[in-house]
Image (tube, rainbow, N blue to C red; front, top):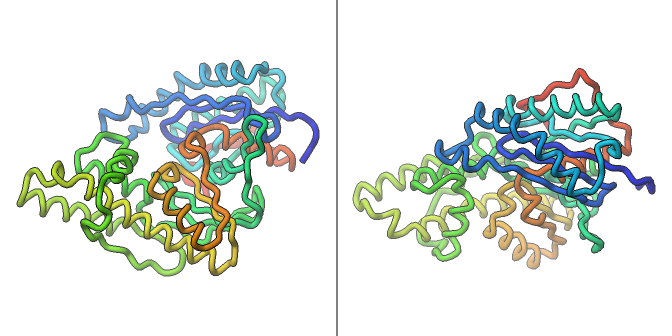
Length: 343
């Protein structure tokens, strides 16, 4: 690592969080997030047009707050990292346009970051004076969120191989759609996780899709769950209310077993003991506990990101940007956002 102090501003606007962060090398100085949860809750999900409008309103105040908390001025920045994709096109456009404009105004380079790569590198963010334990390369990472579910072989900070991914719905989407079916508020995934703590995970049996290799499929499980709810509610209108903890625990247990099966397969095949999770669903307590339990049984070195780095944030984007800065991997002004962006 370079001994020079490098200040990177990270910008994240891929979905419904307007976020900015400042890193000094790999040390976190600030991490600011303006949530749009209240805007989208009424609709039961993210409305792209409303998301992009909110980003336009929030981007400048959030960046100003990040600089203020970091106790530096914009003129002390050495580079700007931004999420290029994947994500909502209108939302991404706000962050990319802002980064390009600020880069021109300050005459400093900018680094494009894949949102999923940022999630992986959240494990390398250092806070305070106590060193954070980091996975050693190569390591296996399960990246699981509302839009993506992937098993990754991480060879170095900027070299990642996708071993397998979902063929349809992501695990986070399965959680949120199941919650919506049961009439729970948005976002539904955390609501299911909270209720599952007091439920019996063996109360109801949901299907376990058999997908070859390291692939995933959650659409069938989602359809099965929908039919399950309709059938029981038809016989007992109070079924959900009377059994919600058991329903949540059983569904969550099935989704976690699907995820852990592929993680165990990858660890065994590649003989790697450093195992990490990342993405919004890595905040799920059931998944975190399952990983810790399995890690103890298998002798893994388990890496779980702090809650603040699980959901979308700009610190992880700044972290990825720092590694790109060291390699002079800069983006030009012709750069455009990509709603679909391969890792």
